[in-house]
Image (cartoon, rainbow, N blue to C red; front, side):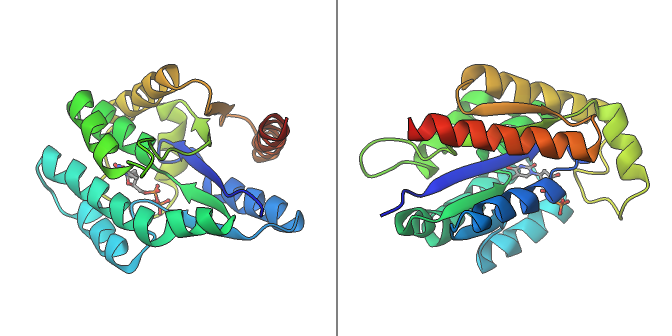
Length: 213
Ligand code: TYD
């Protein structure tokens, strides 16, 4: 049976990851793979309800972190683990790295507490930890991201944060990459859409070759 694959996509708001996730899905479908496209917070009816709350209601930092992980637990149990067990490709728009970057970096919430929650929520029966095998990080200067967002939609609770919040989120992603360099692939999201798309396609291709070797 084909082995399941778990890839996540990360970056500050405005980095432009959505279009590229759809393209990666297309690459896998063309290769004959079943693809599950999903997102966090969200991905199940209950997790989408939690998403509504965390994206729009003001709340305490620990409450916010707990709700992110509660939504993630439900998503893992109901969607991600069954898909991986079937051998599907799971493409997830944000996963735990976003909690470290936004709640840890952006909000300044305790990194060690997040690590404890991660170990609890993502524990595997064999004692391991469920993590994406590949994380594509769309890295962008927060000033450029803010310009891109200004002309876009009505901002949610996070998108309406000032540029220095996103600078701290970006530092959170960089810290996470330094802690887990092998699964992180950084893309320069300041490039043109085409150049970013080409980089992403190459990264996924290279990673698949390494995984098969
Ligand atoms: P996003 O994924 O950017 O969706 P959309 O493109 O529809 O706006 O929005 C999710 C927001 O939630 C984003 O601002 C990051 C934030 N977030 C966290 O703060 N912590 C998390 O753990 C996750 C998954 C997301």
